[in-house]
Length: 128
Image 1 (cartoon, helix red, strand yellow):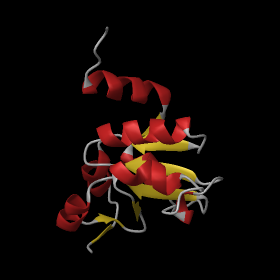
Image 2 (cartoon, one colour):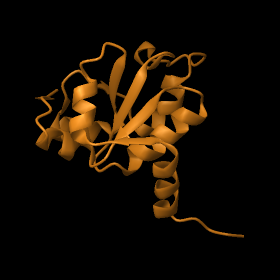
Image 3 (cartoon, helix red, strand yellow):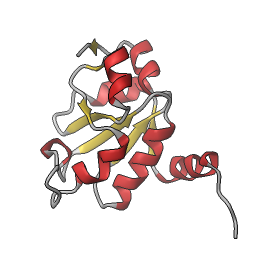
């Protein structure tokens, strides 16, 4: 049996989904059908804030909150939306984007470099 590492899984996800630079992601936010999704844990968001207007859905809940049949579904993740995901580095968001793509949602992309890259590119940060 072949064992895959987390690094292998992230590399496969990056091959399967669109990866955006922070600058590209911020430009797309001006489009009304685009939703920025922060998949970091609540503690991370509490510590550093999130990009203004982003929907926070922790990675562990993403599939459930993206599923329209789930009682915890978030309408912001509905079909027909262009979902752009970010995390703390770009690894979890790649895995999350691949999962949403496999669920038939999309188009889906993720941000290389995650929150730090978005913040450095001038993404406005809101503190909660």
